Image (tube, rainbow, N blue to C red; front, side):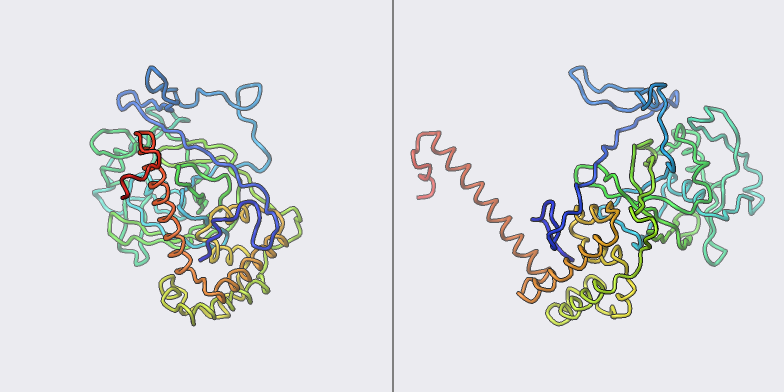
Length: 392
């Protein structure tokens, strides 16, 4: 709802939340469909692209092995164009083999037994991973079931899943063999959400999302998942890019270990005042963002992260700083100041729609100004001292 695009290091209340979190570039990974070997694409040189075997790069520590920090863990993550905070809900519609296979392992209680004679007669295929190597252990894949118990996705019966696991070239899909072992993710019911910038890099802070519900909405094909943000984490390194991103991370905890994230009453009241104003001055906007029926009771139990998710949707930099902050009191002061600033802006007539329209006009004027200047310089270089002959 808010646009703080002109702010740098300061918040609406004038307090510093700290530096912007670091960013990680996602390396391009390719594979040899004949040998099954994975490569990381290095920077392009005069001789062309350089391919480096995956896992052969320099690691941290004198022994060549990565030094793990206390509490460090691996997590599959999904990049989003917005910042997900604790309390954020996301919905996923999954149909690609890589996602169906991963979420069949994440979601607890997956039925690994075949449900019909046709499936029972199919042989278990060999899953190839970095840990097991080619031609290693055989596994029985899970069966995802819908809420009604009738719709299902039987991963044992889909040829495209088998091609994903074995590397067969019968489908044009992202291959799964050679990926990192997934044993650590089984039955965790969790994945990570990280913000991806316009340049493709991912932020170094994110939120662990826990699956709240899932359903098979298209029998044998489409899995729908609803997840909620729970805990924060800091990315230490990118462990894998394909077939999906895996990061090494550590939890983000507040400096005051005794503090508990609780409803932010003062900020909630300020946000309620903003909503009351918006429903009067721009009811169409409130309806467009799905908040026309929001009640005061819905807002009063929100934490600072919930409120930040509402207000900072269009300003990811501030949302990322808030996500990385380890000071609960500072976070609440920042959110309260933001709500008060937003209220003052609306009282002055600057609603979100008007602000965006004004921003568009300013950007358009700047664009024409730059074009006019370039043309004037070009004409001057070609012999017109004023550079304006073409305008008369």
